[in-house]
Length: 115
Length: 110
Image (cartoon, rainbow over all chains, first blue to last red; front, side):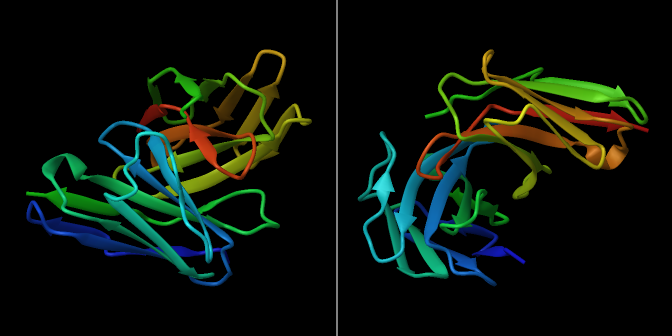
């Protein structure tokens, strides 16, 4: 149980385009989802926290107009990287949790490469 | 904000040996968790230790927590080549958000 999927697993796009990444909780309803980014050989940095049906809370330094997060249902959250640039190239990982869980369940990650 | 700091940053051992990784943090926590990440992959949750616990075991894993020193250690006994991965500690203080450390890269050679 507690499986989280991400789609796509990798994406290559041109500079200036927008890319949408999906995060789904497959066998449970996630009241809260988190988005992290990870640069090579570095740790995970929390980008934002999203609760179903409400606006995401962004961490300091993360541009909310650049990284649009939508948590429209209890099983789906999306991260859209708008007008992507090469510096946005990174590994994006989502996680999901419930109000009764004491841990987060992580997706397999999405590798974004912006040319 | 990132508050966990692991050491060592990199560790190389032979199969059968024990691997010990340490994690220090700065503020009070509800719990501390350890995760494993294989290269370019997602995170695998290993173990969670609550702030009122001092030691926890899971298979070949042993985790200790010293809240007075704000530190934790992860011991992997009888290591295997398949244990090669990066290991991260993560602290939770409130609101479920996790703060990850920089990680320890473990290499286990046959």
